[in-house]
Image (cartoon, rainbow, N blue to C red; front, side):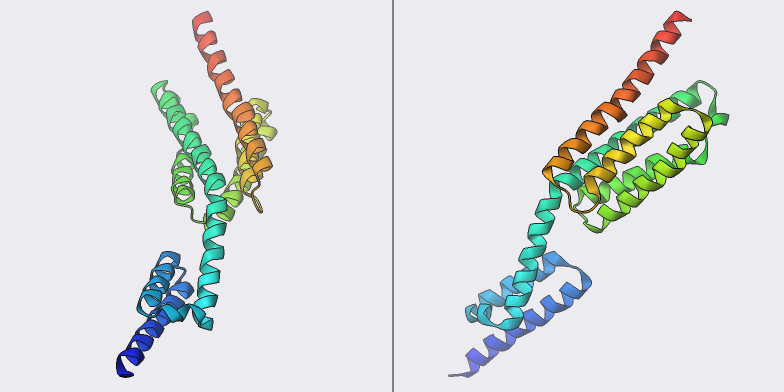
Amino acid sequence: MNEPIMNTQAQAQSYIDKAETYKKLGLKAQVQYELEQARKVDPYIVHEARYTTLFEDSAAEAKKVEALKTPLRIGAGMLFVNAVLGVISLIIVLMSGNGANLGSGDFIGPIVNTIFGVNLWQIKANWQKYTVWWAILGLILFGGGALVSGDYFSLIIQVGFSGSLILLLAGTPSKARTVSAVAIFLVLYLGAICLLYSLAILGAFAG
């Protein structure tokens, strides 16, 4: 009579073992799946210490990911916009015959931004800090280069882009910082770019 019960308990424990392994590997979805399987096989497993620990950790992680969902996807959108505008700028420069003025950063930037954007869109929390580092690096390299050369318009654009990403993703995102970051992105970054293109079009007509 006790054999089926023992088999059920052993099976539930095996699911717990798998869940612990998946947790070490960082496979959150698999942890939740194994816990659910353990509970189905043996409902009393929910009172077991290992199950409780895994379940609480999984719930806390899920809550954290949900809180990061909006900021990370907004950051992804910023990166995608920058990548698209970067490609458009490349095409315009190449078609105008000024390709010799382009640097390696002009080609690498859109590719890297796309890679970062895809990972943020997939809510990969580790990419939050990577994106902040990338934004800081861009501010130092491109922003510093624009400052040294006296290209203050490009400096404003870089500050608007990098600054909005840093404000959005550094540390623990909040609603106030998210709104502020979006405002900076729209005004300093997109606003400055729109003004730049408008001046270029007016200059072309005037010429």
